[in-house]
Length: 192
Image (cartoon, rainbow, N blue to C red; front, side, top):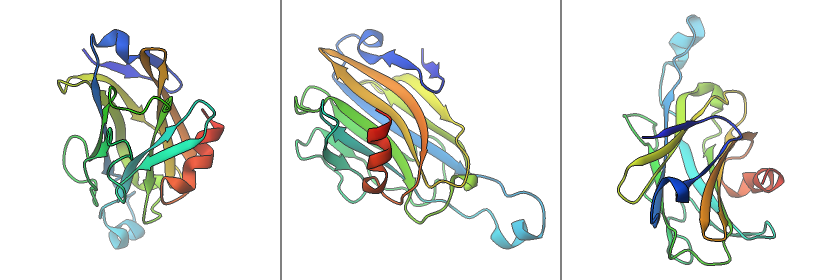
């Protein structure tokens, strides 16, 4: 049974799933319906291009690598992005990042999950955004609903952390600005 997480909460993924070896982080969103009025007629509903990304970070909070739509695999090949969704249309996950926890380089202590708007569209235009973590059998372990609408262009969603042999996921929901993962990296580092 999936656990619904609130902002700034932590779950031990390792305790929830026996012999956890791989996870998939899925992100989904919809385009917010415009408010009634003349401008909504001109703007229409359209699409929004959000990009799921992650930063691989060591124990000293140094970014070792990043995975995003422009770089679909980590150097160690244990983190893989499944591709870019340019519209946010459709049900379910719009973008996914797969992580092989056993193949992950030992120097990686944290994996920061982020989302940003490549085209600079703000999160005022985003609705029903979520992040979920699935185990190796595609069973949903937990879900975090994002309520961070506003004039920002990115969000530090959550942090996967390795402590000894245990993996934990902490929800963040920190607003950021930037159109790619590298431009919001400093915000991520400040909030680890």
